[in-house]
Length: 177
Image (cartoon, rainbow, N blue to C red; front, top):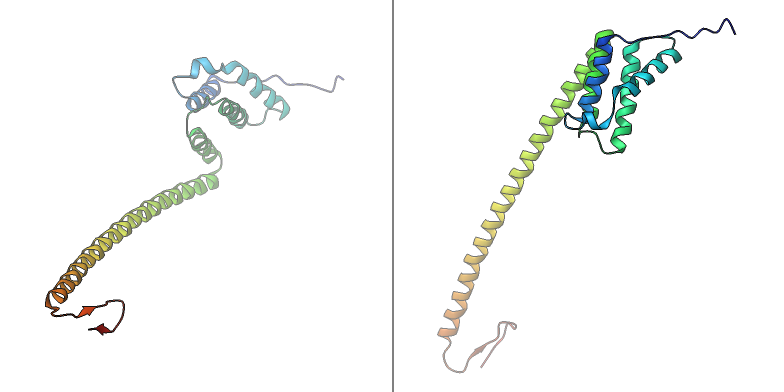
């Protein structure tokens, strides 16, 4: 019993501010007061620190804040895109303590930008293809109208030239007297 010691941890003001910033960013300015208080999150962070023997308080803050934001999302109280905001902040934090992580994060960000550019180019090609198809349809309709008009004129000319008792049957190749 005496060998079991539970350390007591406290958070620095900048760590408390980090909690508020992460959560407020995830829920938006208009709902931050009505949704939660940071004291409950602070208690969970301190519990996490006790459980992990005080290692890395900022990691504990990010873990607990993520869980809190997921809970708030189930209540439909988070802003759209909160995960991206959280991951950007967490990525910057990880980049500070692990340079290879920052390098990978930047590569991923650049890849996302390339994907967005590719998607936009693809959308432009689809619009251009649709536009060219529409123009082709217009040309076909105009050509059909010209042919149809010429066909009707030809038929009327044939009917006018018919003299006597000749009847033309256009469904049969025979002309009957």
